[in-house]
Each structure stands twice: as structure tokens, then as C-alpha cells.
Length: 287
Image (cartoon, rainbow, N blue to C red; front, side, top):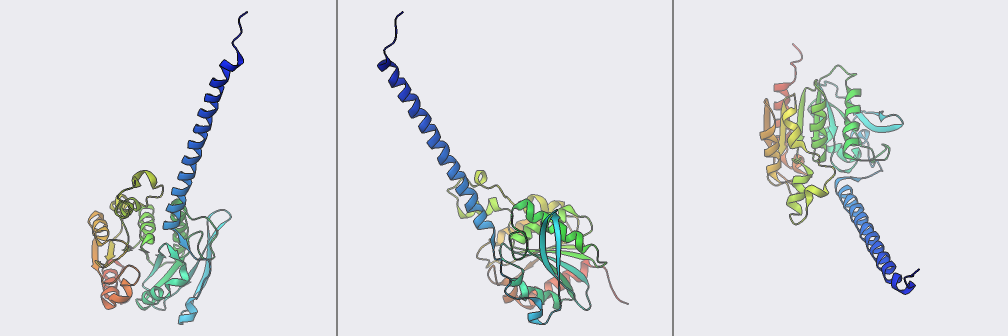
């Protein structure tokens, strides 16, 4: 029987080994790149702080801690700050950085508008358990809303920046919210990403789209959209597009100032605008 010399077989084996090595190297690069994209996305969306640096009593407001479980064994922490002559409970969905202790200025403003405030930290923030993601922050907000329903007062959903997307999503899941206020928020993370990184395939890269533009037409309560033309992080047109897509009844409140300080810099334009909107949409109280 004729045998093939071993030296004739060896080059084929070396070629196979090179092909396998090349394939594995490419696979590793793809996995590392995918992990890097996910890490980059998460790092830009969620910038939490664990330390509560202040509390409502530091600015003279009484409050109560509360904890809810969006899923068994997972805890979300927040504060309830009651107003003496409360006209509604404002469920506060905050932005992507810090935690509830960095929102005391806003809590004070809402308290002065006779709003009781229910503010919470998403998982991964403050004293809440670990694990932020798009679906989890939605679930966190929904669980807090369920807790708020134990009160008899109307519930106003409020979201600023990333919290605006959370509040919009929540407004599509419930049918008894009194109103929705969306401040300095975006149409979607895909839209923002394309504006910031036009040279990247953003649609393919994003796994947490926070697509408020497609959701806000489904909202079943009055809507107030607040935005500043001077917003240095989320362009003004995002607020206008959300307003245009929202169903009636709706209002748009144009404020001034940058992304993080617009509500402060706008002063009475901000507070009077919110007060006027709530006076129209909330049930009348008193004689």
C-alpha cells in the first residue's frame, strides 16, 4: 500500500492551526470590542453615587425613608417628603448622575408648590441594591408608583434628563396618573448618540435605547414638556419633538439656562409654569 509521506501532510496541519488561531483571535477581538461598547454605553448612561451627602431635614423638610421591592430580594430606597397642603404627589425620576441627595433644591421648589415628593434611587444608586439597566430602572419606577397608589392624592409623574425617559415609560404602563412632566430630556439614546458620534454605527451599538419618542404618543394623561434652548447636553429640538409627538392635552414650557441649572436660572418662569399647568390638570380642591 502506498503511504503519503508525513512531511507532505504537515503543511496542511500547519495551515489548519493557523486558520483556527486566526479565527479564535478574531473572536476574542469581537468579544472584547462588544464588551467595550457595552461598558462605554453603561458608563455614559449611568453615573451613580452611593453616598447620600444630605437629607431633606438639612433644609428643614420632614421626610420618611421608604423601601420597595421591584423584584423579590431586590430593594429600592427613596424618600417621601409630605407637603402640609399637598395638592398631589410628585413621583420624581431623577437624572443619570448622583443620587436623590443631589436633588434637594428641586425638592424644595416642588414643596413650595404644595407638592408632596416621592423620590427614589434606581438600582445601583444611593442605598438601592446593585444593577442598573433600562428595564430595571423602568421596573424600579413602576414599583414606586404602586407604593404611591396607597395614598389618595393624585400622582404626577416627573422626570428630568434620563429620568424623563423613565417617566414617559411609566406613563405608558399606568392609566391613572394625573399628569406627566418631562424636563430636559431626549427623544432616544440612539438619536443623541448619532448627534454626538455621527461616524459610528450607533443604531447597531445601542442596547438601551430609552425610546421616548415612540412611547410618548401612548401616554394617557396631560403632558408638560420643559426644555431650554441653552441646554448644553440635550439639544432643544429633542424637547420640541417630544412635545409634538405627545397627545393632547399638552403644554410646552420654555426655560433658560444650561442642562443642569436651567430650573434654577429660570426662577419664576419655571415654578409659575408648572403651577399653571397643574392648576389646569389637577382636580379642584377646597371650597
